[in-house]
Length: 186
Image (cartoon, rainbow, N blue to C red; front, side, top):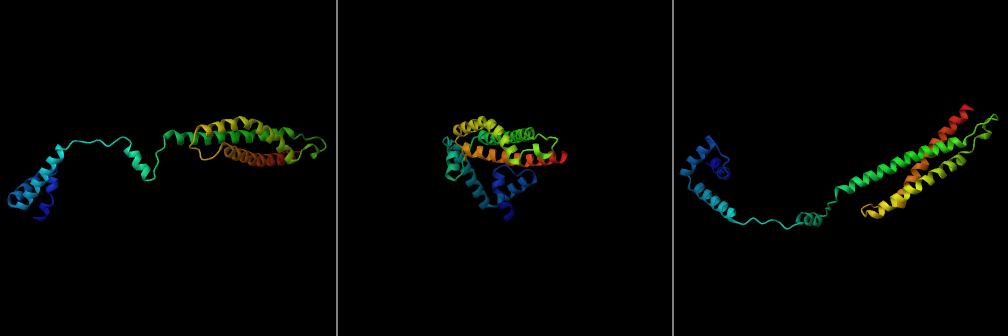
């Protein structure tokens, strides 16, 4: 009896079919408690069906999320951040190769051996000077991008400093390697 009484909700919702439905209907004939509960459920469903449907006010979802500490950000903010990182990364690689080329052009081996090879810092000076001249437009673009979008947590100067630092580190490593190769060939 207890098993069938637990299925009143399923019967009212039309979820009992076939043999289960027939068994429950037979049970209802002999159980006044289940009949009363089924009548109560039907009156409750009727009452709910007569209630007007109210739509939640606009912006309630965002208000609840904000109150809970969540903030919905537009999709483009994440894409723009990744795009900016990609552009900066591409510039770093490009500038690293430019530093390398400038450093290698300043190496002029002569018949006297190593006398024509400048110091590492002299070679890097030429490469960094050329790279920094190319980096000025990138700095202007990054600064404008940071000013145009308030979601970027770092300033354009910080991004530029990181870009120059990475480029310098890459340039030093690569130039050291190339100067070593040039000395080995002489």
